[in-house]
Amino acid sequence: MWEGETVFVERTEDVARQLLPGLAEGFAGRTASKLRVPKAIVAPLIIQDSAIGVFAVHSHDLIPGDLPAITAFAHQVAAAWHKATLLQDLEKSLTGQMRVLEALRESEERYRVFFESAPVSIGLFGADDRVLSANGAMLQLLGCADVEVEQIDLANLYQNPRDRARLMEDLQKDGCVHDLEVLWNRQDGAPICASLTATLLNLDGAEVFLILAQDATARTRALKALRESERKHRRLIQNSMDGIVVLQGLAIRFANRALLEMFGCRKQGDMVGRIFTDFMSPQHRDMMLRSGHARTRRKRAPERYEFRALRKDGAEFDAELFLSNVTFQGSAAQQGIVRDTSKRAREEESAPFARGA
Image (cartoon, rainbow, N blue to C red; front, side):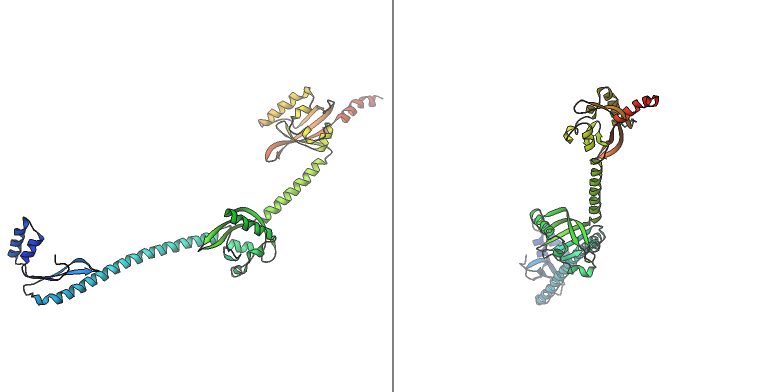
């Protein structure tokens, strides 16, 4: 209306007519005249070249000479309004930033608690093999204190440098490694077997390695002891004077050397994979089949059997079988001890004649 300039309004009814043109023009003018609205000086409130409102002063005593003072005061009002708006916006911004910082602190605190309390050893290593960060479990695994962790060189941890080379190669190739067993050196020089799960990360533009480690020393020793025990057990079974067979159902899964010789076989393939009743005289097979079905249904079945055994060449001999439940290659099975009782049977048959003589 005034193009951003302060104006002196002597006849307020004229202004009313401008504000309410059309049918209301006459009514607005008459109303302003009857109300005797005093003269006015109206100054725009300008902030950054934009009018946000007007500052008006009404008085019957106003004169055009009052324009500069009221204009200056209007500029001060606009400046104060602008500052108040800026402060309000700044307060909102600071409030938002404080909330973000508080959420960040809470998140960092949760991460710190998780990191420090994790039962798994966690370490963050740089590309130069230096330890950037390590939780309590990792420090305990490495046998060092927090103040010493920065002095650890990851390359010197490995007893075998090829383990480190393989870890780095797999990380660069796949970005992660799972359950890689390596030999580490503790700070006191004691060796430990560590199972590593690692991933390659980018932290602030630098490559870092996040490594989760578990002490696999006890497990490795147990597996080694188990393998040694199995080796000794296998050797004992192979060198046993008794024939030993492992059955699942009636299928032969293992036969030792004595059993192969007893039935005239030369190699495992002559017996393994076949049905045990193939090596029994036909008149005794039904008995073994019924017993096998009973064992399959977990019903009670005899543990000792006397039967006529059938050699590979078709010759028969007296034998006895003792069965017990075992686990073979992770599945339920029966281990049998087979003995040739032909000699004993002949001795029992000749015993009455010997006594009669």
